[in-house]
Each structure stands twice: as structure tokens, then as C-alpha cells.
Amino acid sequence: VQLQASGGGLVQAGGSLRLSCTASGRIFGGYALAWFRRAPGKERLFVAAVRPGNNAKYYADSVKGRFSISRDNAENTLYLQMNSLKPEDTAVYYCAARARWHVNYYYDFNYDSWGQGTLVTVSS
Image (cartoon, rainbow, N blue to C red; front, side, top):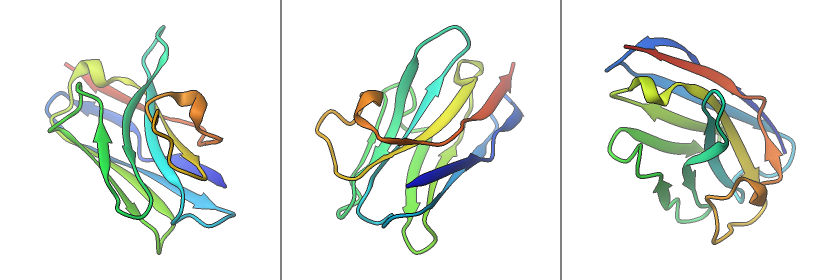
């Protein structure tokens, strides 16, 4: 599956953004989907994931209660709604997919397909 991320930009602390990730190619509904981010000078880290089937959602502690992941299988699109943004949320955000759910969903090496990344900058 090919992924295309969009929706990043510059926002003030406390603001909101919604990222989108559009997929093309193979069947989207059966895929495990996730968002990761890489802050300047740091490693890429897990943000959120959503399972296929039951749509169970999982979040990094740093974003719980502020971010919400969702998927629209009819539109082949993954979303990340980000509220109450903080300067430490500044990063390049990547969407990712794999054909089956993996118990270690928070490791980036368990995903096969990646979007190109979209930059989110939160000013203080």
C-alpha cells in the first residue's frame, strides 16, 4: 500500500491540527495503521495506532487525552486529530501501515509501508 501524509503546518501552543494519510493500492480496511513522529535530532517514536476489525486504538502516554486516531476505510484515509498542542509536539509526523496487526505495534520496524512525513511546528 502506498501512503501520502498531509495536514502539517505551523500552529500556536494550545491549538489544533488534523493530519490525514491517504492510501492507495491494496485493501486498506484489513491493515494495521499508525502514526509515528521524529522530533529534531531524535529518533522516530510511536504516537498512535488503530487495529483493523475492532478499531481498537492505542496511544503513547505523551499524547493520551489530546490526540485521537481514526480511520475511514471507505475513503482509504487515516487521520490524527491533535488538540492542545505543545511545543514538544513539534516533529515530522509519519503514517505507517502493515498487512496484519502486530502485538508490538509501537515499534516502527514492524511496519511495511510509510508516508513521506508532514512537518508539524508548534510555537510557544
